[in-house]
Image (cartoon, rainbow, N blue to C red; front, side):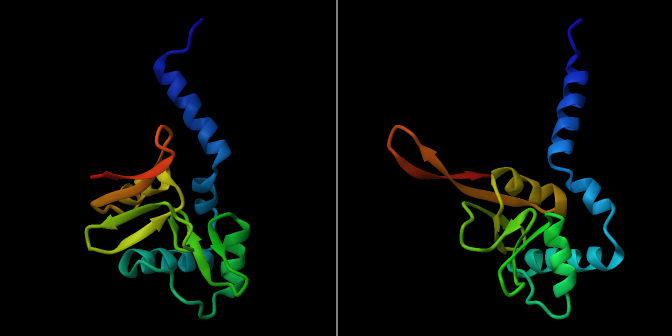
Length: 140
């Protein structure tokens, strides 16, 4: 018997959640880690960059071990899903407040609008196979 479209969708969402369990991870964060992650997100949204570390080194390392942030050797944030700011991003999101931020990937660039309830313009690079070059693409 063939699966219905709804069953296929539920199956796909389940597989995605299993492969990328970020929601479950967020829901199980201790209060201090959640507060640090919110502080990082707030800085990306309001300033376009992560905050400099203050007292959160241990918290940030724990968030990194859970796959929620990327840190450099000094413990400074290079990225926090869905944001990225290490110079390797290829998708950028301009938010309604005029701030432009990098995204981890194309899918994450689309997630910024819905995750943070912001109007955005997504700009990225797409590889043009026929010309062998990157072309800029913009989604409004």
